[in-house]
Image 1 (spheres, rainbow, N blue to C red):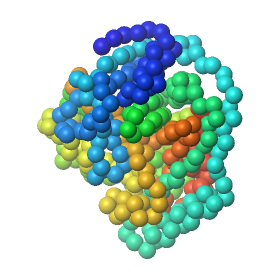
Image 2: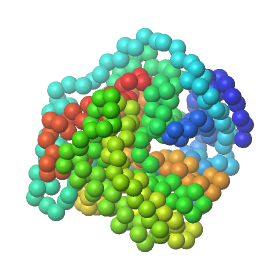
Image 3: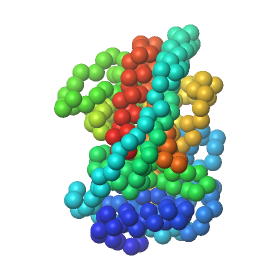
Image 4: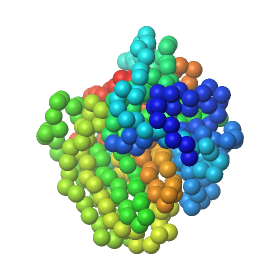
Amino acid sequence: MQLQKETTEFIHETLRFYNAKQPLVIFRKPNETILKAYIHNDKEVHFLNSFNAKGFLFAPFNKNEKKILFSADKCRILTSEIATDKDLKITLGDSTNKVFHNEKSKKNHLHLVQKGIDFLKNSHIKKVVLSRKETVECANFDIENTFKRMLNNYKNAFVYLWYHPSIGLWMGATPERLINVTQNKFNTMALAGTQRYKNTVHVVWKEKEVQEQQYVTDYILNTIKGSIKNIEVSGTYTVKAGDLLHIRTDIAGDLKTTDLLENLIEALHPTPAVCGLPKKEATKFIFENENYDRAYYAGYLGELNIEKNTHLFVNLRCMQVNNKIASIYIGGGITTDSKPEKEWQETVLKAAVMKKVL
């Protein structure tokens, strides 16, 4: 593993591999200062065969689809430390982005949300998470500066840039951890509810958001109780993610045995925060009604079994970039108390997280 200290130079040099169409990922974990890059030695698509593998994992929302692995033994792994904000020098460019955001897309989402509400009212389903894709034309898209802006703006998020010539370019700044296993120590979080940040995290949450977050917490606790002992659950608290606020609960414990990683990941994904509850019925509704492919949005990504540690994050606040067209993926949890117009506005707020860096 190489250590390079000049962050701007590190990013610039690493992205030369992107220009050469070499598979790579660059990322920074929440509230850390180490940038890490995996640069794959070949251009083949390698899929995960076993959760005993070591490397960087990129998994789609649909758990029946294959997961891509950048295997540690097939990659150059580089690191750099971000000492100060000045290490991330950003060149100002001409921001002439055109958002393909029209009344039709709004109408479609309002219809989808109302359909979801009606579905919940006429079934035993508690919650369904519905999403959409918004397209932005970036005439002067600069991959290097966009990534630096993400690093600067979202320091408590998992920030990444992932590329494979056969799959495409994905970038994101996700606030949600799926699973963290260090030795036999387990950590995850329940994250739900959204409102705009207005200079304080001391806010009042409505019953709809509180209930939605409790659904996620209860599901996680019920899911892990057979695999985790000494479970500790924090109280709920408000966290800032970019310009948004969410309700969060931290959950920790000890693995009962050391061979439970695959079972935990498969049981937790997709979390109720990205599909709903009960998961099977909610996911079926999503596949039948969203009318687009989530692909890697609401999937998960991160390091698997590196130095006996696994850090995986839910792929939220993300976008796919192709030919200077950015497709931004956003969604929200729907309950019987949801109001379609408010749910639309929530997706607009979440889309702004990514638009801010373009």
